[in-house]
Image (cartoon, rainbow, N blue to C red):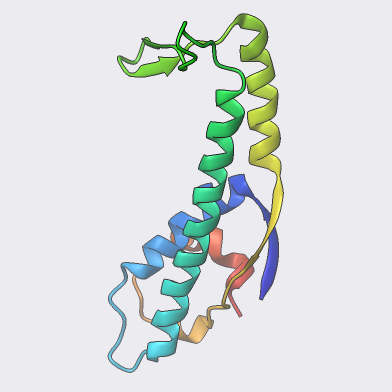
Length: 136
């Protein structure tokens, strides 16, 4: 079923919930098709996740300061990790562009998950939170 979701919902909610379902040990009589549907959903989400991060990098590369060789400048940030150097003006632009990217809605074709196949699985409501759109 094709669903329209934001990158934020896909990455922060649906993907972790499906990963949790993928790690559940199911009953012996759980149809293999159920397990395959979860695996295929994760694969389809991964494709969209890669697209998100690739687009993020391209947006960032257009805003980052460059050194004399045209390479993006980096410095060690407060966290101790390397961070791109942005002017204050470009930091503001980056914040807006990144938020727009996170809110971008995309269409993803995912398999539904039958509730009956989840019976007996040790799950919490939080485990299933991101999967409500897929349950039938």
